[in-house]
Image (cartoon, rainbow, N blue to C red):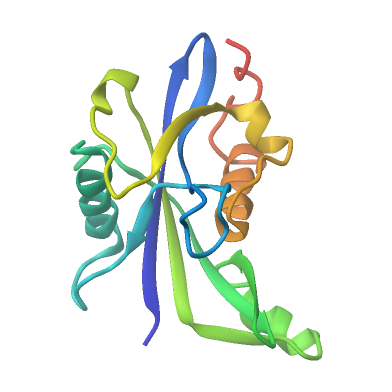
Length: 173
């Protein structure tokens, strides 16, 4: 059975720039210290929906309730080449694995990305030992050090045609 992960891109205008709230992994992180990640986590119950996971994780990490305010962006699946995970949009893995020797579909993990417009003042408490920063869109797109999967998904979200309209155009205020 696949482990479902849900992440939320919380969007706001901070100091005149369109920004996303990201968590910073300090030197104590077991993997990828000094990298940024999208807030979120994995489902804790077999019957917990991806949306419920996203809402719960934000309550735990930021003491903010965004129930009814999250918008689904995209479902991502994974391929693997040996132990190396490769993220791709849902529907692509089987075709890519079939056409590329050495790749196989990784059925152990699924990822769901949501987004929400928030006011920075709504984010009051950061929990689970991670710092959080509002990072302008243009810094993210220019290769900010991010967890590999999160970096792919967030850059895809910010730059994809048909994506969240006007993000980059409005990134400087």
